[in-house]
Image (cartoon, rainbow, N blue to C red; front, side, top):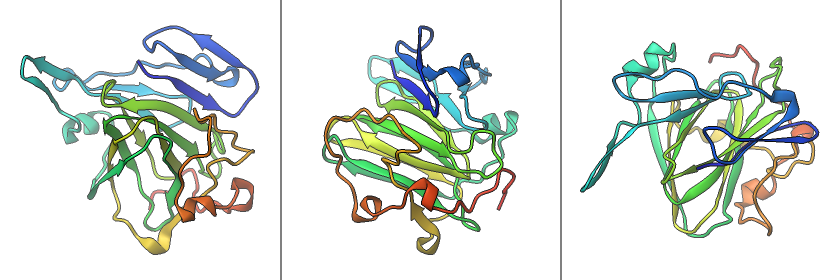
Length: 230
């Protein structure tokens, strides 16, 4: 079962429920974790403390050979009012635990929504609301995604996103609704003290040169607005 955390704020609440380990800041507690299930696909959509950010639980159909799982379905998403035109699938592999990729974004007019899952190993997956005008601006949400728990995180446009590998040979796959565009690509510091993201790490992570040089959140001018739909 995964761990869940969110910030910013002071103090922690420890809860029990569907998730075996579940940590939220007081300013967000309580919040509804279990939302609507599609009866056909078995897909369960969970809300989070941050508007528009969702956790998905696809059903796995098990038999002695293994399992089958429907990881995305256009009609199921439409039933939820989510009309997303995915155009690109990405797949990353990290050889070691402690690899940190983020916090990344792609600016308008090529802003990206993402549907993230971990198909091998496990990650600590984090999203930060960077939408100017949002009541959750500058707040983050983190959850463990793994090949075992089979959870997904839907990251809307206007969020920073990053993840930390928790074990070797971890593979992450995600859909994007705009193609990678280098001139719109950017990053914000993963360890920004104002964001104060609680990464489950005890040593310096392995970073790309771009991520190591990323600016602080307070020094970065967000290109996103709450109602931005480009």
